Image (tube, rainbow, N blue to C red; front, side, top):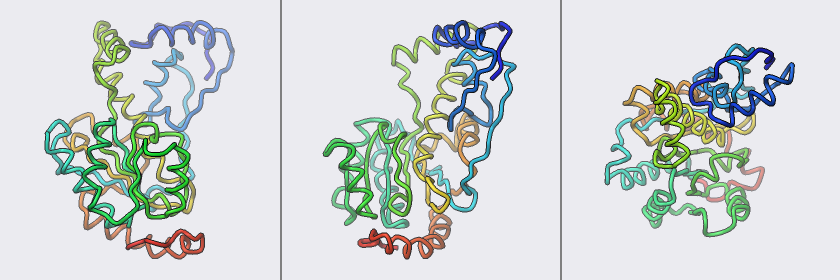
Length: 292
């Protein structure tokens, strides 16, 4: 990102962005910033605002080498109760159980809170014969080792598994995200940043909360496809992504996987990959316990 001239600060860029602007972008003739999750809805506007980069820098969104369009499906559960509804946890556990029947396990169930993790894990216990793991019962590296070696396990976890976790191959073929990962609005930092944007005439929710959630959502999706031979399903159980206007921006920020709203269509999609990938899993010694 070449940056040589001073520009007005983006709304909500904050002290960190102003510091980067003064000490990096305005001093160094050429800066290259790169990440797998910087773009939201195919734009770097939010990232530039947070980093303090000039608004007129050169941008380039590079397509992924993975074939998301044919090897991944994004299931949006538009019929689920609102996440604030007391019935949501029970409905979420029911839907996870249905999804597990389709893939035969190999699932991360990623929750946005410890409370939700414990609730969904407790409701799944006794409902499946698949190995059921939960974050906190063992160290993270032990859980991942057991998950990989099982090939059919279900790991219920929170935000620490949304990024930096690499499980390529058959062992992970389903990623379930319980809710849109909005930052807690009562968090002091989040509240201050949103208040600043609102004060400057913008919308803290639209300009900060939504794009931040989009980047986190993309990181959660990124747990699924880790190699060109991987295939699988990402399921979002938060119906707001289908009902609210900001859902379009969140979906546009995700890889171009097949969009699915119906479980029968999802099962048809997955059946083709199951016959392809089970022999590969068997050769790797991880097919025991699979149900297709």
